[in-house]
Every structure is written in structure tokens, then in C-alpha cells.
Image (cartoon, rainbow, N blue to C red; front, top):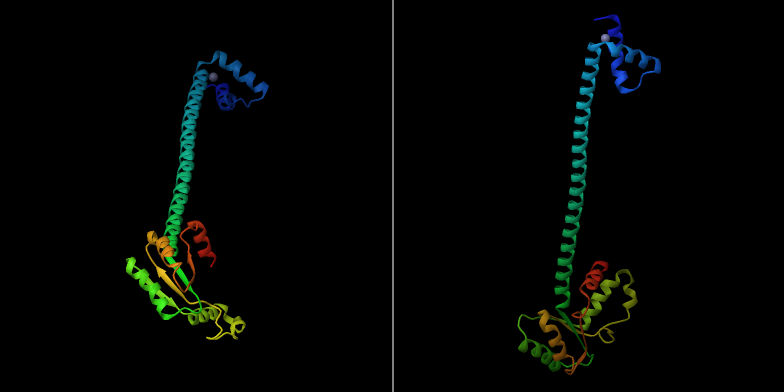
Length: 213
Ligand SMILES: [Zn+2]
């Protein structure tokens, strides 16, 4: 190999990359005109270079596809989690509503007689299946209020059996479809002061209230 060929071939990579000074470019190009060996060497370098570029493009393309897939996977995962949360929340709301709205509380007048009490209870037992009735005396009510008041229960200290401000009540647990009928059946009976149900409340509102309490 000629001495000049050696020098030119050392410069060929930089020549191909376009980073040579003007005078070096002149030197390389003048030599290339007459030297077949160095021309071939340059072609080889250019071929190699193109191949490398193609490979790089391919790798970039694959990286891009992967990035897009990662993004898609993320979106799908987040959507799925959100969907599951929404479904679980709705089930919880539904279960809570069924639980709360199947209760009817029947408050009694203070002067209700034992006979009137039995009539109310009988009316419900005779006409509806799968019923649970709990009697809540005004004393029970006063005691549970005192419990709720906790440290402040001396506010209620003046109250006893004779001046108890809380009415006695029946708490009835029934099927949802029977709640309105039971309310209608008992609200005009003697001794009944008021009937409360949650059947017409918004299930989501009931759920929120449950959480707050
Ligand atoms: Zn040469």
C-alpha cells in the first residue's frame, strides 16, 4: 500500500462523515480520482454505514412500537382498575340500600296501651312473611341516647321513666317490596305516632350517610 493511500484511508471515515477540513477534503478527492483501491475502500465504508443506519432505524422502530404498547397497556390497566372500583362501589351501595331500606321504624304515642301495641305487631305478623320485629321501649331509647352522648350524658341526667322524651318504637325488618305496604297498614292504627322508612331515599345518599356516620 502506498504511503498516500494509508493517509487517505485514515481520513476516509471522517470524509464520509463530512467532518474534514476543506484542505483535507481536497487531498482525499484528488487522490480518489486516480486510486481504485481507495475508491473501493470508500464504497465499503459507505455500504457499512448504510447497513448500520438501517439497523438503527429498525431498532428505533421497535422501540417506538414498544413504547406505544406500554402506553396502551397502562391505559388498559388503569381503566380496568377504575371499572372494578366502580363495580365494587355500586355493589356496596346496593347492599347498603337493601340493608337500610328494609327497615321500618314505627314510633308510638306515649299513652299507647298494651292492647294497641299487640294490635300493631299482629297486623304486621299476620300479613307479611319473613319479618323481624324488635320492640324498642322508650327506656331503651333513652339509654342508647345516653350511650351516644357519652361524656355529655349529664345533659340527659334529668330524664327518667316518668318524663322520658323518647317515644317507644317497633323496628321492623321486612322485604323491600313490603316496606311501603307495611307503612300504609300501620300508620293510621291507634297509638302510632309516626312511621319512618328510607325506601324512597337515594341509595348513593344513604351510602354516603353511612360512611359519614
Ligand atoms: Zn489510494
